[in-house]
Image (tube, rainbow, N blue to C red):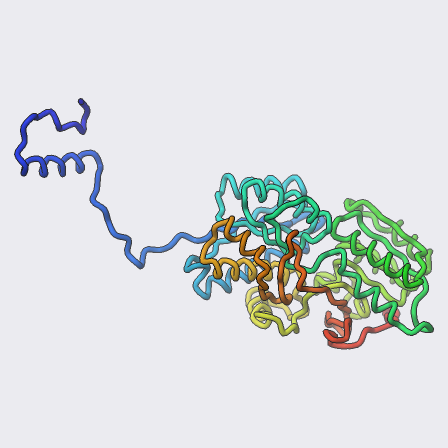
Length: 418
């Protein structure tokens, strides 16, 4: 045997020489004696990859989601991290694109080799990204991808911490139908984007209200890519409906409010699937708190809830980003809740192993979040939490229905535009 490290050509070595020559061989070949790991050696961070919408249709929600994740990670790291390791969030922007969100999660998993992933904003982006996560065996906990179509594909790795989307306007329908006959509206107009988050809850509310005798006088479904909302608003105005139900996001509802105000159309109630829950982003876009007065939104969080760690979330958010508590978007709370569930599951099983995490999340355990309790069914939906109806009143976004969770009674009819 020959080579630069071969010193075995001598046929006779005494026992002392054997030991000496062996040590020389190890030294020449780059060998080393075993070393012990000291307890103060720094641990590598747990890398968590997330795709967020920092531009495009979901940019307002996406930025709020990023803030929620950041506040959660800061809190965890201040308290020693996960399993004694700091949490490092790796964000990629998806521009609200279904194509880009897939590319982002593929990169996070196969190129960046993140330890864990958390979900993006919206049902639209959760659907394709969860397929990527499933392909590689990653659990995906998320807070804004609750459209019914997300949970009909047999995925075992997806978990939504927020209430099921299709049911989120049920409380509003129940409230309208609970009004005395002489006060109860008789006509309603619907306009919704063809979005898997927005449309299912609008269609469910329509079914309930029609069953209760409230007549549909206008029903419009428009492409999610729509940017000119004027024709849609005009049809709603022409219907003279007493109640208007929107399956919208921030740009839609801002355009509708502006059109209604300009043409002095004052429905008795306006509720939108998303947008009014964005705090100052909403009120600032429509002309202030006086314009927002009386507008409703189904939601599962507000700053005054006495839920697990909610007070801490509000304090930490204000310390990091400033503003007032009423400026905090529900999106922040949804993302923070995602982190809370991950943290509790990891701490319970003392592992970030993907298969073990999925098993734990399917174990029927109840996790506590700033939104309330979370318990997942077989499909990954949170069956322990229901949405409330919130309303802007005197500059605050507060729960008004059901009465058991209300901070005030609903303003009905809604005040006229200022």
